[in-house]
Length: 318
Image (cartoon, rainbow, N blue to C red; front, side, top):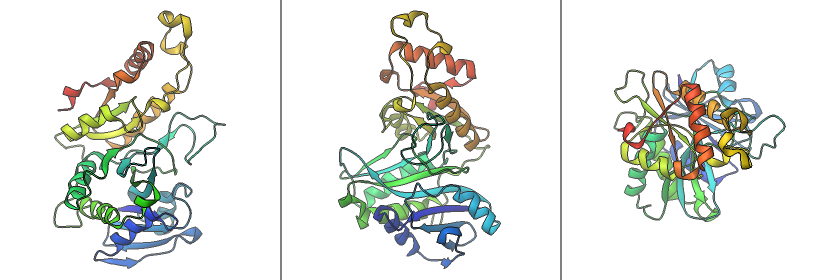
């Protein structure tokens, strides 16, 4: 059973951390995958793929690796750049998927409509570890350490996360940031002196998993809980991934079924994928209440009840 780390040569924020990771001991050349994708192996459980296309353009790398090698992939970690209007330097982690899109919609950044990969359970614990490592490399407070909401591809079926360096070309090529990301992967997977971080088990004492619903792209309300409580993190569905058609004057008479848009699909897909990633976990939806209008909050709460999805308040994640 192996972890696949994926990098691309066309992105300095991807290939530089990969090179820093490959500079650590124990690596050997591995087989070449279809489309000329090179691989490297470290021990029995870590594989690094080096592709030349943009990071979101190679779908099903997990299944392709399994078919080519016979090894079972247990998780996917993509190294990538992050772009933001703010241009603020940042190190980010996020799950992937476009659960709100439907057939026929434009796919701006890969994936497939109505899909979300299982979120990698390491995201929450690694966010805390990332902050610690970034501090030790004197990247704070220059760099913001944050989660992002669920977005983009490529298509995978195994628990997946992106680790990104942002937010402009000046920062994508920062070697100190690349070394921090490489150290995060190395220590997080237990290849350093300590044990692996963020390994989920159905027998773990702390079973509550946060499914974020609503808010902006950097999910501040959900981040507050995650950073404070060290909570397991599932999908994080921002407001823009919850399209809801305004019922207009008939708001008081609306029902869950009468509000159009793909918001219900997005919630259901995100919940199912999170449940897959955390077998035996207790998935609790956490709503960013301030980001919703009253009719939106009521509709979402009613739908969660219909689906048997529990809603958690901040105190419930302690």
